[in-house]
Length: 383
Image (cartoon, rainbow, N blue to C red; front, side, top):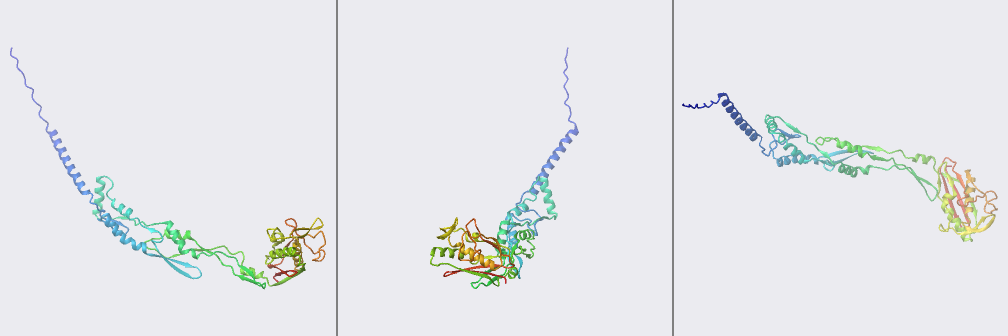
């Protein structure tokens, strides 16, 4: 029996599959060509893109170094231009200070780097689109951003304008050796408002700076004016009183001299109360006081500051003659001889004091003098 073998026929490729393959190969080739073209089109040439300005300065197609140089030639004159300040005090003055000295700065590195990075960020399509728009004349305007060094600004302002600060002073007076009252007029204080001036400078346009008026504020009014002192002016003698003592008793005489000296030149304002103990202070050996007879438990015994009561009693009699208001006074427990009976005023620190009030409408000046064996108090005021 004869066996026949049949040969299997190979399938023929379908035409549409071949067409797809060819189409895909064409697409791939075109893509490679396109991406290659985009790559070449967006290839970094090391230059700032077309159409880029920083402020009014065109930096297109410049290297970063060239852009810095161009910017610098424009910025330096801006930093060097003076800002004019007007100070209106007693007269108008002007002061000119370069903006650079006031702390105006511009970061060249940052500005140029920002311009250089334009079109270099993003994917290749974004880069190509940015370059295309630039080449079609689209302008990219970057701000010319200046900054102020606030510490330098405030330091310069303080150096330039602190001399215009004037302290507020009250009217004052002094008493001449012949008991004349010389008045010095008050001064109105003023102060430059540096915070407000700093804020004004930080808000101005460095490209077009205008003159600035330095803000000066007047301080509070003085508490004492020359007119007030004139109304209270010491014009003459109101009263005087003298007592006598044994000058040969040197310790007691020294106590009289020390305490009287502490009272000489004291001035009381209207309504002010005088305290003998507060004015003279504690009578101690360190203050120079000596031992002399004092009254203790109705007896004369040695003690520091003996004789001081003659000073307080002499002043007391002067105040009586001037019709002043006595607010504290204590008599001795024993009779004393340097003033009439009942016209004495004993003091013992800090327990017994002699006080009176200036109940006049003017200033009151106390003058004391020790000459030989005589102690004298004179009270001057508005008469």
